[in-house]
Structure formats: structure tokens, C-alpha cells
Image (cartoon, rainbow, N blue to C red; front, side, top):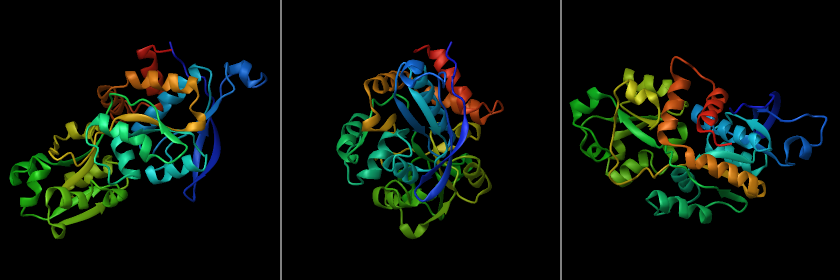
Length: 311
């Protein structure tokens, strides 16, 4: 059975001008040389974005690498994409789980890629020099626009295409950066013809978490951007609006890494993990983390790796 060998300690990391905290970790006997203790002299800093699912996946990456002799430092809950991209650029982190479509649009808003394969194929040319992605997984977690069952029934809304004819003001809730994204309020206007004057935006900084859920339930917003694997969608009977024009691109989970750290060992380990990670896995992991169990990302990663028995 897989067990984590990491010890944790406090450290500091500066990214995007903000002081961030990280938990760092190492494996093996500190009295031995690194290449003898771990089977490898590689060291890699694994980061996660500022939400639980990213941290769970990052823990899976970190523990899988450790199980294969790679010394790992861990920097959890760094922030949103703007922040962790700068952390990759300045070398504060080397590796982070990301989502294919949003990553592509971050660097190339004009890309016409639509399918999962097209998005993945477009990424190498879109990424800055020194960055690359490894194999994408079947697991997908994408932004999704959700309304309450009551709102859906009262207004006849089941699709983003229905919003243009909506008689009531549209109050959108989501992470602050959603307001600047191609699939944000401007996308609703450009792609689905919603009158911009009929849309207002409420920034909620919890990545579709309990604050966003609460705002949708209490009417502070009437449409909320919530990640599609979030348990609260099913738990509250929210209606996820269809996206017939594919405004929100496919979002397969994949490792984003500094090329200098993408050794054969790192590639093989992470590609093995990606081949096994599914959307159903993400839903189960998120449910255990956010539900009554409140399982930690580290424990969930250990359980997932033990269950898959990959290494």
C-alpha cells in the first residue's frame, strides 16, 4: 500500500508580489546523499491553485513522484492562475495541475480550438517558452453556469442560449477574474447575445465554493459559475445550463511544468497518474473533502494512489 513519506515544515514563497506560504517536504534519510537516499537527485516543487480540488491533484502528483524517488517540496493554495503562472515563471514552483481549456485561453484568447483533442494540440504553441504540459487525463472539471431549480422553472431557462430572452436582470457570481475571461459576462454577450446592460457581476472569491453556493441560494446572484465536479450542484439541485456553442472549452486535467524539470522519471510518473484519473474520481474526492468526512487533500491523495496501485 502507498504511504506518503513527506515531512512538512513552514517556508516562504513570493509570487506575483504577494508573500505566500508553502509546506515543504522531503523523503529519505537526510544523512544520506540525495541520489542514494531517494534513488534520484531530482527535486521538484509542486504547487496547487487556491481551491481544494487543485490541492488534491497536486498531492497526488507529489506523492506519486515521491514514491518513485523524486524529492518533493509542496506549495499549496497559491492562488488563481495569474498568481501561479508567475510562480512558475520565477521558479517558486516547478509543477502544478491545470485545466486544458482555461489554460489555452489564458495564453491565447483567439484560439479556435473546440474539442478536447484540439485544445490539447494547441497548447504547445500557446505556452511561453520553458513551459510544457504532459499527458492530459480523462478527468474533466470545467466552469459551469448554474441556476436554482426555481429560477430555471420560473424563467424557462435550461441553456445559456435562453438567457438572451430573459426579462429579469442577470446577476452573475464567480471568482473576480471571471469578469475578464472570454467565457465570463462578456462571453455571454458575444456568444449568446445577452444584452450587456442586463448583466451585472458580483465577485466571490471562493472558486464556486460555499460562499458562491450561498449567494445563489439567497438570491444575491441568480446565476453562478461553479466547477462542474463540485458536490453542491447535485446537493442543492442546481440546474447546470447547457452550453451549445461550447463557449466554455473542454477542461481536462493535466500537469503544467517547467520544461527543465520534466525528466523522464517525472514524465513517466505523471503520465501514469493522468491515464488513471477520471471525472468520477474528482467528484468522489471532492465529496469526501467537502462533505461530512472533511478528508484532507493529503489523505485523499494517499487513498487514491493506494486504490489505483500504480507504483
